[in-house]
Picture 1 (cartoon, chains in turn purple, cyan):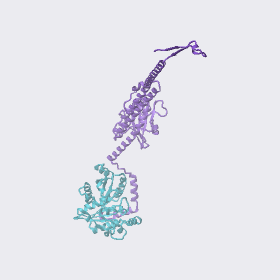
Picture 2 (picture 1 turned 120 degrees about the vertical axis):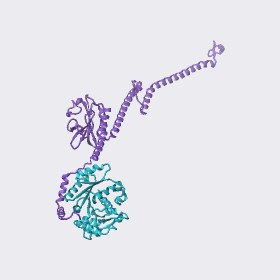
Picture 3 (picture 1 turned 60 degrees about the vertical axis):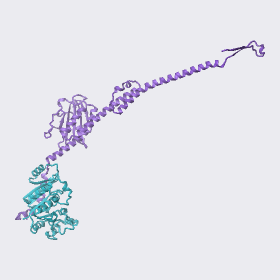
Picture 4 (picture 1 turned 180 degrees about the vertical axis):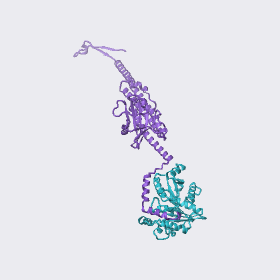
Length: 332
Length: 251
């Protein structure tokens, strides 16, 4: 590239020819703009690079943040689809110390509690189905109740008594120890409804949970029961009610203090409702069968004699008797 | 000598009327001369089994008991209802089904003692072998009177607690009246009940003979008391049971 150097003198007020000298540089545009353009390109490349970098960083950050939410979402989807749920599946998320970690821990606990409650309901439903379909009072219905309770509540001994409205006593029908005869004709062991925890059972609709029998002052277990050998330390009992009428009681004992918990109480209450209906139905079937088998002819002889006496003492009846005696032949 | 057979029950709905009509028909079919007197004056019903209505009835038992006619005038020959070639005879002495007559009975009553005399006249005039008395449920003067002169008293009961008490009263009164032959007929027995068990229980309870335990019959129910069962279902086991009762009554 060739620059044109022109040197001239210059002094204002003097003609050019009279100036000392003057330097004029003639630089082409391309030379000047090339540097500017280079700066512009550099700036553009830097901007693009920065943008790419920012996008990449954003993607990484977003990915990092969304991954635990995605796992949580997948776990929720599995729960919704009734798939097995293992807290270990979201352990990475629950281990986080941020809000997402907290949400994951709450979610995990909630699912476990919900699953446990659903399993409980399913068990209660299955127990209800089983005991409802049994019709023989002792060998089926009551035994089914005890067996079913044993699957969902840990206890050492159980007794099921049925209440007799006439005698005001509870008759022991079934135990888990099998010490009571299933023969319905064998006289039953009976308990007064005023002893042990029966007054409370009759007074309350819900189950009674006594965590420590020895520390419980309101009522004492005083009757000799089939469970005495276990030295009861805690107690769980519920009255069986059908249409507001007490038909019996289910009682469980444990040889440990705090042998039962609130979950056990809730399960027993749920089962007792179905058990009461099943027992009432079985009793009805049994009574009906008894009536059919025995065809009991109940006659109140006192009332019969009173009514016969009223008629035989009437004037018409006496005259009729007299007429019969005077009649020669019984035939017309 | 006609045999006076009275069918009685302490409670209504036991099947007295159907039993009376069917047994009467069976006896007539055997060649006997039989009359049925409907003494259920308060709620007559046997006429329906012989297809009689108010128009086809002239004088009735009511008119006789009010002293308005002789009992023979109230007799209707219903033998033709049994078929064409019936050797015996079946007569019916119905009670009035007029509402006004029933109201009059309830209001004014009637002379029940005329029944005894009426039975004798029927026997003589109709030359009867058997006279069957279909009664009103419960115990009143005319029932006691008929009971007193019956040769055989058939007490019908259902295996029902409502019937047991009243049947016991009827049996005791019949024994007090020295009725020589008292038999029990258990009717409308549920099919769940064992026949022998029912028979044993009733015989033990009343210390009397149970002639037959008749099971509840849908066919009988379906006839709606409009037709005679023994004619509609001659081969049905129930007809066999009615025959057994008829045999027992006439022997």
